[in-house]
Image (cartoon, rainbow, N blue to C red; front, side, top):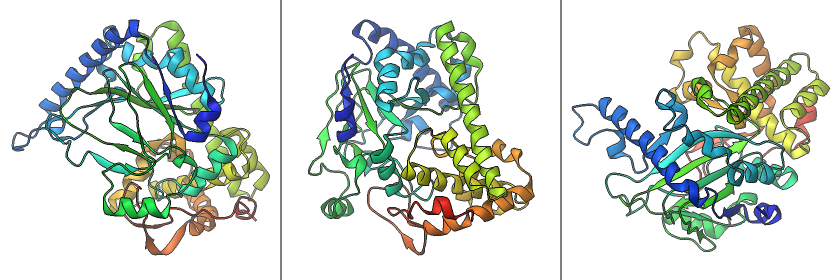
Length: 403
């Protein structure tokens, strides 16, 4: 398949015809529908009988199947929901677009239509899939993409014709215009100038670079089964029992990605430990292990990610962790490999004294992405925060924060 990577990097998205070939489409539908039925039954059993609105599936504007949380229900009749991600038109295309030899699949999900009509007002307005207080300010992503190319790409692959997704071409490498901010502040659930509606036939895919500005425009009860997930160099499969059910070649892929991600966890530890001895060169060597070949802007983005990691592992070591704000507890325990967040168990690699010292080293970085006044900007997820939504510090901080 011929892929125009230059156009992808310029516009931030690409429609891939027949990402799932026509002769595989029906079998893919059947496998996913079995998994959807199993998840709905699980959620029905967990439903609060006193809830007059029903369970999660009945009340969500966008019910989702998450394959990673349903590994007990994967078998010969449903393993195709995993192996679909390895098709050349998906995995091969992703490796080409990321410019890596072997991109690894991250989350494997399926977006479904709601039981009740949410078409008026949609599910969510125009947004970028990021909340800077959790990860990094927007300019960090934009500068890194322009300098080095994307670290992560995301897919929507409908099993039935789908025109829900809109994107703003080119918005993955720029901030919002004043006109966009004004429109989004007034109503973020209508088409905006420059927006493009993706009209996908069953089996086609659209792959895009986050943080592109996009919108899920219509959540009616019309049948929707859209495969959703992404690729990067990082993958974290917390429950790997289903690997045995994969074909040998597929199992080898998933095992390889698991070993590679373990090496990335080790590199994250090495970067954090380098700060204990104020070892700037050792720190940069570890950064290059994490994100090979990244330039100065890429090093800066990784450093901001690591400042978040340092804070979270320090939070986890606190004896009063359970009294911290709920959002801090959630962030400290979540797994999000693309931003070097490896979950609660990662903190076990360090002593309490080490985590306190590491966090102390990163405090100057954290201070540069914070403000004395609450911040907010249209099109971002989450509420206002004291962390900057847009602006990044100068990249010289990578050289200076350990001096």
